[in-house]
Every structure is written in C-alpha cells, then in structure tokens.
Length: 196
Image 1: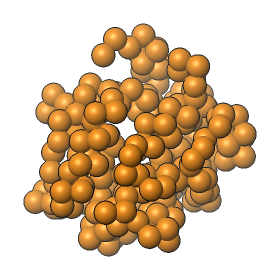
Image 2 (image 1 turned 30 degrees about the vertical axis):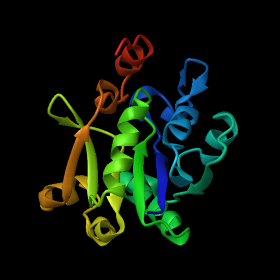
Image 3 (image 1 turned 90 degrees about the vertical axis):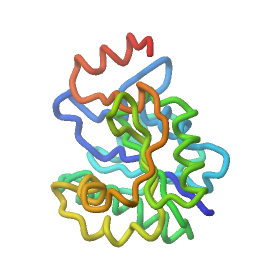
Image 4 (image 1 turned 90 degrees about the horizontal axis):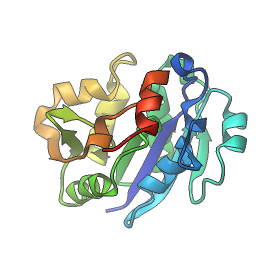
C-alpha cells in the first residue's frame, strides 16, 4: 500500500500568539518534529500544508526534508480545507492512503504512528489511535474514505466522517502524546514540561 503523510500546519495560532508550527521544543520546531514523526518506514511521501504566514513558516521552521510544502490559500475556512489540499497532493502522488497529523501534537510516540500505519496496511479504512478512551492523532484514511472527506461540512471535517461511519474505524493503541494538543500558552508549558 502506498501511504503518504500530511502534516497540517496552516493555522494562525491566534490563541497562542502565532503559528504553532514555529513553537520550539527540545531544539526543534513543532513542524520539524511533526515531519520527523511521520517520516516512518513505508511512508512514501510527506506533505506539509501551510497557510497563515506560509513564507515565514517555511523559512523559519528549519529543515523539513523530505517533506514537500503545499500552500492552502483558503486556510481561514478551517482545518478541513487544509486536509483536502494535502489529500489532493497525496492523491496526485499516487497514494492509496494518507496519515493525517496536526502540527500541534508534538509528543506522539513513534509506536503510535507505527500502529496506525500497520492498521492501514492490514486493510483498515480508518485507523485512529486511542488513549484513555479518547481519540488521538495521527489518523489514517484509506482511499475509499476520501469521497466522504470531500463531502464533509467545513465546520465538522473529519469528525463528521468518523461520526457517520463508525464501522470504518479501527482503534489502535495510542499513547498520552496522541491526545495532548497545544492550543493555549498553558498547553505549551505543559508540553515543554512533559513527563509522559
């Protein structure tokens, strides 16, 4: 199965004072960490979707090899628009499944990513990691689910697909980092002090 990864990094990060992609953690930007996280064996391509201050983020985030940058000019319409930009890039590259990862989850364990990838390879339509009865990131979507993503309402996005098609979902073991998102300065401090 040809799997591509899509890192969603287009948001303005208004609640935290700027693009979350540029937040620093242990010597790397969140965006660098996300690219490294999803660049796993079996992932053929990594696409980074930028939007708000795209040129600045691309310039200041640090080296992003092997990722390819795509820009969402409609990023203000919500995360689904960025997901679809990434999905179109992955589809054009011949992907049969995508691994979707938001840049604001920098503490996901590699084992969680590998579990999602293994689930996709074994035939799951949607693979989602879970921790403490909560769905986390990254999530995997096989090609047959992509029409449903395209049809989802902008304000609900992928959550709508999960709600409408629970029979498609395979939950895999995750880690505490897969549910630890950063939206506020307090969240960021918690991530910096992270002990798992």
